[in-house]
Image 1 (tube, protein in one colour):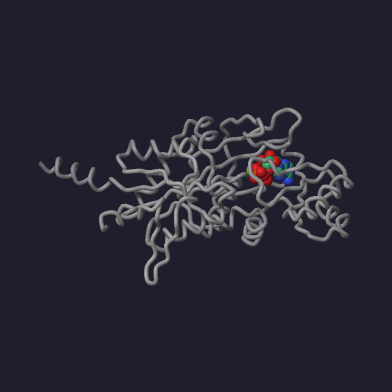
Image 2: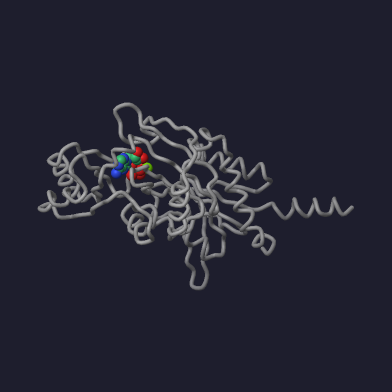
Length: 312
Ligand SMILES: Nc1ncnc2c1ncn2[C@@H]1O[C@H](COP(=O)(O)OP(=O)(O)O)[C@@H](O)[C@H]1O
Ligand SMILES: [Mg+2]
């Protein structure tokens, strides 16, 4: 009798209404999280944040999705791509202000998405990054390059993803002309020291709720220095050194993220944090490590949003 009561209570209690904010339900990551939520008995929907209206009434906040008022949602799992950062953050903020648990904090998304802001915060908190310069001065480029150089140096667009805005300039003069073009085109860029000894490899460390749940090493394909899987890199499971674990955990903490992918370069002076991804892809990490990261994200939601559900 008790057993059944407990079981009924448990099943009822754990069932939550979860919204995945994603522009594309067919993406591997969206699917993986959706299926994990379903398997654990939750009521889950995928909603396109770009089609959400932010309703600010005189005395209340609400969200309409294609004219349907969203109600009684326990938690959101935002998957915000680079092209929708600003509006995505506004939608997340609206949910947060309405008391809905979010796996991704809107402020943390904004801080981490911009490589410049992200590196400022990391270094201010004692987490090393590759030496970098941000400049708008096309007349002093030689000096700027000297500060991170000599060539080769890395030049990257502030909001680059998948390695698409990242260039290796082999000589000082090519660095100068690339920088000048970007600045004249009003693109926000960073000039960065090239970490040669990383040998085209980097670490992707996946963190859920303050714990490292999976990590892999990605190796660029022949003739390429960018280790993005989208650029044809290969990945394998990796054992982390203590300093790498600490850098990754601290990076996520100071940015205020709870689910994140931290990218680290192994330099001769220890780990350097390259970037912290607030909507990290699941396909590479799940495929490489066989860890069910999506379920870990859902379990994290369960630990935090349950109380709210029983109250609504
Ligand atoms: N300073 C650097 N030194 C060596 N390799 C780098 C450096 N910056 C980036 N890379 C390589 O290029 C890849 C893409 O750079 P990253 O800053 O992560 O941009 P994106 O956000 O477009 O992925 C990295 O995964 C890394 O392999
Ligand atoms: Mg990257």
